[in-house]
Image 1 (tube, rainbow, N blue to C red):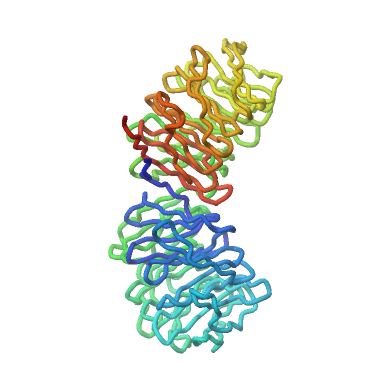
Image 2 (image 1 turned 180 degrees about the vertical axis):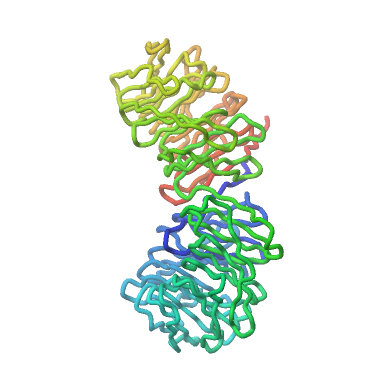
Length: 616
C-alpha cells in the first residue's frame, strides 16, 4: 500500500489590512491555520508532517485546539463552527450554526466546556458563547455595534470574556451566564486582537492606532500601555503572550515584530525588535503571530512563516513559505537531491527539495500569470492568459533574463522536446504552433478542435489529441507536420498525453475517465481496461524505469498501474487530494508527487507518496 512520505503544505490565507489569528497546541508543538476551505495542522519540529481537514462547506477563517489537545474547533465565513477530533481521521463531533455571518475569532474556556466566537453578525449578535457539546447559549453579549474582530476567555476562574472590534471598543463580560459589565474606548481605530495572559491576571488589546493597552484580568480596568518609545510605526494586527505571562509578542504593518517586557504595574517596554527576511515590499507586512513554548512564529502578508527562538532572540529565524493560491502545475528536475518546481496561477514559482521541503521562490522579472508550465535544468517555459509564451533561464536559485513570443491565440497545452528544449509544441483551440527558442517556426491549423498535445524527446514526432477522442500521430520535419496515423480508442475528449522515458510507449487519458497505454512502434494498445477512475483524468506520469504509469483524476484518487500486469492489479490512493488531482510526477521509481488546485476544498498542498508494490 502507498504510504504518505511528505506534504508540502500551503501557507495561511491572508488579506491586506486584516490580521490573521493563528493558534497552537503547546503539548504537541502543532500550529493551526486556514487556507480556503481547509484547516492545516503543522508541527514546528516536523515541517513535512502535515494534516489537513477539508470538510468545511465554506471558506474557513479560524481554528483552535481544545485545552486537552484532543479536539479542534474551526469556524468559517457562514458562521458555522465544526468540532472534530485531532487524531483518527478527524471525526466530526458536533456542528453548530453560531452567527449569521463570518466568524473572525474563537476561543475555548480553560475547562474545555464552553466556546466563545466573535465576528460579523449581519445586524444580529456579533458575539456568542455556547456549551461545546449541546450548543446552548451561556450568556447575552450586548455592547458592540460593528463587526467584532477578536475575543478571549479568561483561562482561570472566575471566568470572564473580553471582546474588541471595528467600533473601537473593548468590552468586558462577567459570568457564566455572561452579561455585559463595562466598555472601554482607549483606542482610536479598529481593535484587531485581544488576548488573556496564561495566568489570567491581565489581558491586552492591540489596534490599528499603533497602541497596545493592558487591563486587569479580573476587574477589566485599564492598568497600563505598551510604550510608544521604539513602538510600532504601523497598525498592530496580532498579539500573543509568553507562557510565563511576563512578555508579549506583537506584529505590525511596519514589517516588524516586537517582544515586550510587561512589568507588574502593567506597562510594556520593548525588549527586542525582530525583523523578518524579505524584500521590504508590501508582502512583508506582518499580519499574524504566536508564542508557543520556545518558538516565536510570525506570518507575513505574502504567507512567509518565520520562526524565532524565544531563548535566543539574536539568532536569525527559520523561514518557510508555500503557495497561497491554487497550484496548477508541477515539474521534477533531473538533479540530486531531487528538485521540484510548482506553480500557482498567480505566477508564483516555488522550489522544493525532497526530504527538506521548501527551498525558496523563483522570482521572475515579469511576474505574469501561469496556465501551462514546463521546465528543464537550465530553463523554464510558461504561458499565461495573454497569448504569450515566456522562456526564462534558470541560474541556480534565481531566474535570469526572460524572453517572450506572442503566438496569436490562447495556449492550451505546452510540451518541450527534452533532448533539445529550444523546440516546443504549443497547442491552441484549432491547431498547434511550433517554436524554436522564441521564434515561431510555423502555425498549423489542423482542422479539428485540439485538446492536448505532446512532442517526442528527440522532436521527430508529435501526438495531438482531439475533442473527439482521437489521437493523431504526426512526424515533424522542419516546420511541417505530416499525419502518420489516427488512433481511436477513447470515448471522451483527450486531456493528457505522455511519452514513457525510453520513448517505447506513450499513455493517454480522457475526460471519460479512461487511460490507455500504447506501444509506440506497433501503435497497438499495450494496457487496456484502465477504467477505474469515476471522473475525468486530469494528469498522468511515467515512472523513470518505464514500469509504471500513474493517473490523477477529478475523483480525488491517484491510480498506479504496472505495465506488465493487468489493469485490475492496480494500486489506488483514495482521497489523495480533496479537490481533485491536477498534477503528477514520479521523483524516483517508488515515489509519486501529486498536486491539487483546490477548486473544491481550498487545499493548496503538494503530497509525496511512497509506493510499496507487493511482490509476486
